[in-house]
Length: 101
Image 1 (cartoon, rainbow, N blue to C red):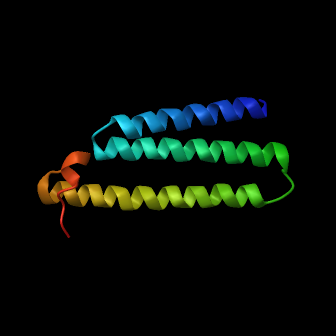
Image 2: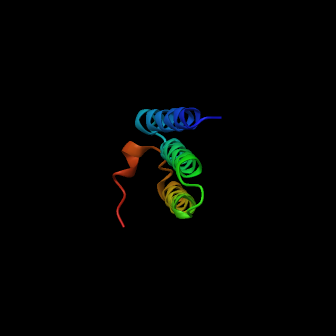
């Protein structure tokens, strides 16, 4: 596979995620869209690292950082969604703006 193929895959993942994040009203679906966008960034970063400077560890560190951010975002996001659903059965983005701490 070439660099262009990986970048095309990354652009497709990012675009599908962007569409999902902007078009859905469910909080879980918005989070899934964000995850697809982050996965697109990870694929692009990995491809750039593999084809441009595979001897250096910069790309690996960036990919690991993106994976850590993605894991934290998923954990916090799903915890907030679960708590808001248990508190008031709120699962839509429009209803979530009425939450108070």
